[in-house]
Amino acid sequence: MLTSLSNVRVTPTLHWSESFALWLKQTPSQKRRDRDVKTLEAYERDIRLMATWFEERYGVAFEPEHMNPVNVGEYFSQFENAPATHKRKLASVRLLIKWAIQEGILEDDPTARIPYVEAVPQAPRDVTAEEQSRLEAAADALEADGSLLGLRDSLIFHLMLDAGLRISEVVELSLSDLDELEGGKMHLLGKGMKHRWPHVRSTLEKRIHAWLGRMPVSVEGTLITDEHGLSIGRETAWRRFVLIAEAAGVKATPHYMRHQFVMNYMAAYMRGDPSRFPAALKAASQETGDNETVLLKYYTGPRESDMRAAVEEM
Image 1 (cartoon, rainbow, N blue to C red):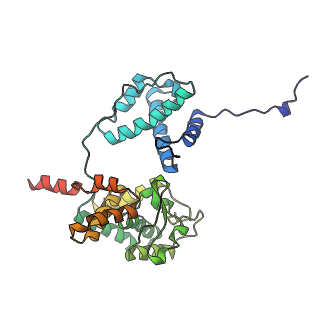
Image 2 (image 1 turned 180 degrees about the vertical axis):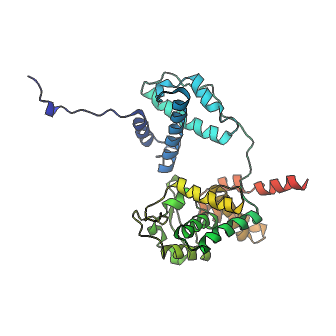
Image 3 (image 1 turned 90 degrees about the horizontal axis):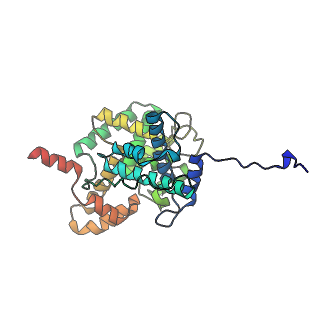
């Protein structure tokens, strides 16, 4: 007897990228915990960029089975002078390879002979006090011009410099995260899915209220929106920061502001008293969400700006 076609269930075949993304979400990290959304997005973004490179280089759509030691080696050769980028992308690609081997798409690891690029740890990138003043002046000029987006872009800048937020945390900040603003705090769900309640300095609180008084109705409940009330992405916020940096004539990225916040905060907490360093470190950890070991590693050594100044003074 023939089976009615209406009773036949057809299971759709997932594209390899969808299958890999699903595997990433279901596979715990090396620390045996679920990967957070930002980490998943970073892995998937690295793989998309590699696929784009492959298509431009070889003229065919990328498929995981195309990977071999030659083409993968060629891809990573372009990052040999960028150790941090090389390390991150290699970790992402090796996850794709692990999935492909489990799925029977690959038999061996084509990156087996690609070592991590070693580099001397660099000092955290910051800006000088004079460069910070120029950046602040450029952001203040945006506020002074009276435009809606100028007010917003200045707030984006100050959320990073005055509260130590990552740029991804800035664009994801919701209106409900400001429920404790009158008490001088706000709520954040940051990297590693960690909740924290950083303090908000009075000048930043005034900027937030100024934006709240003029911003369009937020369609998605986010604090930072475009002129139509729609949330903006990390890339858009990054571009707006770059405009401020260019106007100030300062070479900087958004993450420099987080570094600057930590250094400014610890100096303010210590008030010139070295004995207050342990407490300052713990306080900075609570404000930023970074553990004390990370802060010790990156923020107790020389500053990039001091190293540049020392070279000039020779």
